[in-house]
Length: 249
Ligand code: FPP
Image (cartoon, helix red, strand yellow):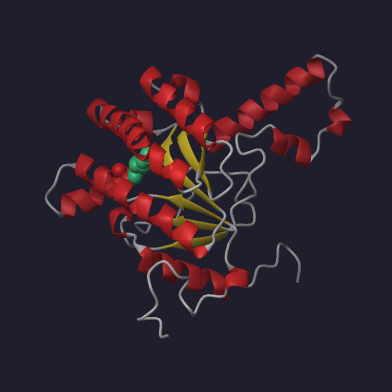
């Protein structure tokens, strides 16, 4: 079978199953620009962005990737126009409600990272429900970074560790990388092997600052709503060409 004839759900034959990233993280950038180019309001870009994310999650599942983390809303995104923020919060809530049954059926385990306590209560309730109902699923682990900031995550980890030291539960000399990682929101999730950023920007924008220490970074000019299976295939091909040395020779 040639690459052209391979059914969509199968891993393309030019990809090596053994060399797939276990965990892919995405910075979904370019929704606003996509909408502008189509002459549509920005919110339409976010709506199409959800479709692109759903397709990517299904693709990761089909191709045997174990974990996907998506940057949905950063601690800095509150600075956007109020109506866009409100739209995004309502969109997250609606998508979670609509997709929960399918996630349960498809064995997706969803979790959220970020400071969730300042999200609208109705969204928090939807988040709790989706986490609870998928917690025993053992298929792909889907993590959504919502009101997430890498610096904020590191500060809250330091604070939690400092409290334990103050209470005598931990000695300063016992604090090592493993201890630190256990206090991050991402505790228990392996670090991303591949970080993808769409829309051409060359920055990490406060995303998973600790966790991406050795991630391979792939940047494409494609805007997020246009990031489809063939784009993901291209990103994986590029990843498989990389030589990962983790600081060694
Ligand atoms: C960045 O594009 C995108 C966002 C801030 C929102 C991303 C959110 C989604 C795609 C929805 C995810 C949904 C769930 C349920 C997890 P931008 O607005 O910064 O685009 P621009 O740089 O072109 O203005």
